[in-house]
View 1 (cartoon, rainbow, N blue to C red):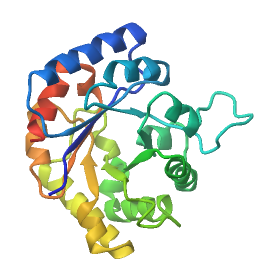
View 2 (cartoon, rainbow, N blue to C red):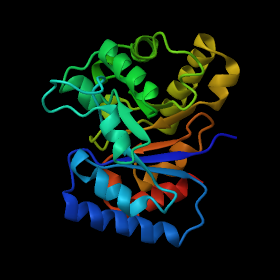
View 3 (spheres, rainbow, N blue to C red):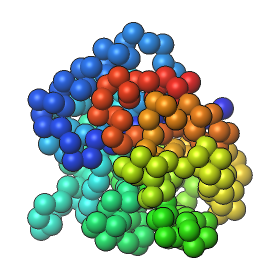
View 4 (cartoon, rainbow, N blue to C red):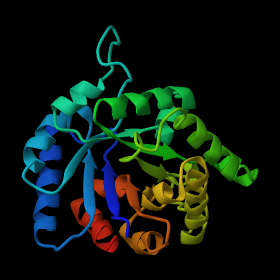
Length: 252
């Protein structure tokens, strides 16, 4: 039985003060529940150190939203995997659609980042997903397969032992329009079958595959009850402690 994993991607939201408030509210809410779900929060870089200080005695894990693939150097404005490790991060989101579409990150660059994360002891949350135009053109499976093949190129099953894949259809991110549970499950099963072909059936069966894209308390239970959906990468709804906790509860 795969563990459900719910991660909150705060994106470019919350300064230090509002980060402290939100984390304390999440901690208080979870303390009152008997939760058997892995919870990860991914605040902006400026809040990571403070966030770790607040959660290090709790089951909540810390992730970052991005990183560069070099350990150090003349890369103005970038953050290295070693920097993330030094402030308590265990996870890092890589390949998010906003990085792909706004900042033009390629599958090859994302592959370098995944390799750097793994070699420096960080667990990647590897995001994939198609645009509305690609879905309407019937290219969903082709796009997802290319992103996986190129994003995970030259990485072994052992290296990917702590990988999380997050399927996030771009057309459902921040739009209020989410994939139906059946649509999401169809792609999740395709991903698991592809991983089984690329690696092994045993590895694919253990792989955590999250869904992301306008996840909210109203739809989270139906989505995460699907056989191949192992949790959620939550956007806007994670910025409110009550809604985030409801989503975590629904994962059970």
